Length: 393
Ligand SMILES: Cc1ncc(COP(=O)(O)O)c(C=O)c1O
Figure: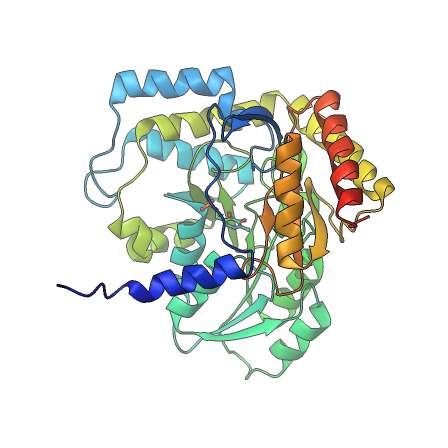
């Protein structure tokens, strides 16, 4: 009989079980919403990136259905062969206008936007200077590029400067940071890094996955928030979080976008979005422009919930965004906190290594514009009960 050559995976999984790190996928029974049902339990949902509640916005739903009726369910090809529909071009023009750049290119996800861009614009003669907490898609893109990767401590502009100063003059160098860090909710050191990039002629790139729709005027992101238009050469955004659908994009110069059309491997070798997704994202940008009250509500809820967790005595780190971590340290304890919250009717995922460093395990919360005060108070009451029970507070 044939031996299973993947038998070793069972061993790895058993090791995760022993460390209390084995996670079953939680399954939503209903829509992605602020209050929903997960694994047959009604919960206040603090785990999604659906910042503005756009996953269920009536206008977006209608546009998706209309595009499906008019244009079908799929694009049928990669963008460079036959998979570019007028609606893809319209979305790219809309995103460029929104981000105030010359052009934009849409990828299948934020992950492929980062990985595809970093790996195509840099090569093995180049240097990448990267914040230690940058997203996995940046790290993978950097590895694929074969450039030298120099990591600076989180948000430490002086350390980044020392790296850049030590490089030969004229060395092609990319400085890259997340706009909002997804596990801590703090902001990248954009102003200092932009100054550094200007001084040494480096390429400046920001991944605004968690900032688009959240920071800046009408959700234009951290570049707008910090007043850095024209100083960030490569702006990445995602269409999968606040925008409520799926995809990623790069906004920048016409030449950058044309180059990515020719060289970014996920763009060249993977089929483009169904028309319904493109239509949904165009409608989402219209909502950002026309319904700023959604962003105001997101921030009101953020202040209320973050203030409540702090008042209870939880360690919420240095978050400046709607992402508020409840840092516990020990991974098994973080998972226990998450599981007990779930039993109480609050869905807030436990996050451990390798997503965050060893000893920094946490329960991550994200409030949205569509949570009611009652939802958030219920969640705070549950955090108090379970936090006391487990000795976290
Ligand atoms: C900082 C950051 N960048 C990029 C991504 C990838 O975005 P997407 O989910 O659209 O692939 C994520 C999502 O997990 C993220 O948190």
